[in-house]
Length: 367
Ligand code: HMG
Image 1 (cartoon, rainbow, N blue to C red):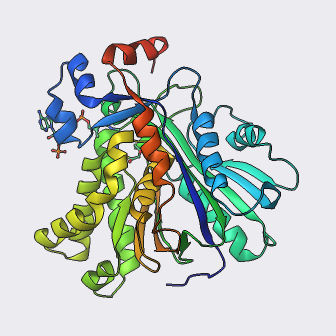
Image 2: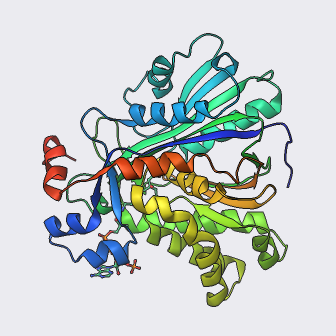
C-alpha cells in the first residue's frame, strides 16, 4: 500500500461529556432484562451532554486539546472541517461555530461534512488528500468528528446512545501515517436516516445490521484481493471498527471472517486479540456516531511502536464505508491523548435514570 511521508496525523485530542448513564439503570426504567443491553448488545454506559453542551462544545474541547499538542501555531491552519450528523443549522457549518470559539479566520477553508457516521472519516480523508495534492501549500488542517447520538425515548436504539468528539491536526505524521490506498463500498439504503425537521433517527434495525455487515465484508475482500487473508490480517496489530454498539462489531467480524474463508476459531482469535481491545473507550462513551471509529483508533494507537500498523473500518448509514490502513508514528507510543479520556472519565458523573429522564423531558412523545 502506498504511504506519503510528509503528511499524516500530527496530534489527537478527545473530548467526552461530563455525564453518563449506566445501561443497567436504563434497563430498569424500561422494564428490560439488563442482560439484553450488556450481553445482547455489549453496551455498558451512555455518555450524555448536560444542559448547555452540544456537538459544538465537544468539537471545541477536542480541537483545543489536539491543537495544544501540535507544534505549530494557528496561523498555519488552512482548513477546518467537521464531520457530524448533529448539525446546529441547515446552512451554517458546525466548523463556523468551532472556528468562532477558537479565533480561527482568514485564509481558511471551513466546512462541514455529512454522511452519517462516515462523515468524520471523509473529513479526515479530504484533509489528507488536500495535503497530498499540494493544494494545501504546506498548511495544516484541523479535522473534527463530533456527535451527540440520541434516539427517541423508548426506541430500540436508546441503549446505544452516546456522545463524544475526536480531533486531529493533519500535518506532519508524528502520530500516524495514513495509507493513500483505501477500500470503499457504498450502496443506497434506508437503514438509518433522519429527515429534515425530525428530531431523532428512523431506523430499520435488522436492515442496518445487514448493511453494516455487507459493507465490512466487501471492504475487507477488496483489501485482501487474491492474497492470503491470514497473512494480510497478520500484518496488523489491531483492527478498529465503527462501534454503534459492541455486538455489532462482533457480527461484522464474523461476516468478514466468512467472506475471507477463516474458520470460526480463527475469526474469534482475530476478534479477541485485535478488535475487542480497541473498544474499551467506546463501552464508556456509547455510540458517538462520526467519532466512534476514531475513539477506537485513538485507543488502539496509544502505546504503539513506530511502524506498527492498524486497520480502521468506517461505516455510515445510507450507506457508505471505507477501510483505511494506518501506521504509528514516533509520538504514538506516548499516546498523549489518553490523558484527555482519563480526565474526562475521572471527572464525569454517572447520573441516575431519573436525572436522564429530566434531561430529556422536552423529548417526551417526540420522534
Ligand atoms: P432490539 O430489537 O431492541 O434488540 O434492537 P434485539 O431483540 O435484536 O436483541 C438484541 C440482542 O440482544 C440479540 O442478540 C438478542 O438475542 C439479545 P443477537 O441474537 O443479535 O446476538 N438479547 C439478550 N441477550 C441476553 N439476555 C437477554 C436478551 N434479550 C435479548 N435477556 C437494535 C437492536 C440494534 C436493532 C437496536 O438497538 C437499534 O435500532 N439500534 C440502532 C441502530 C444501529 O445501531 N444499527 C447498527 C448498524 S448501523 C450503524 O452502525 C450506523 C449508525 O451508527 C448511524 C450512522 O451511521 O450515523 C447507527
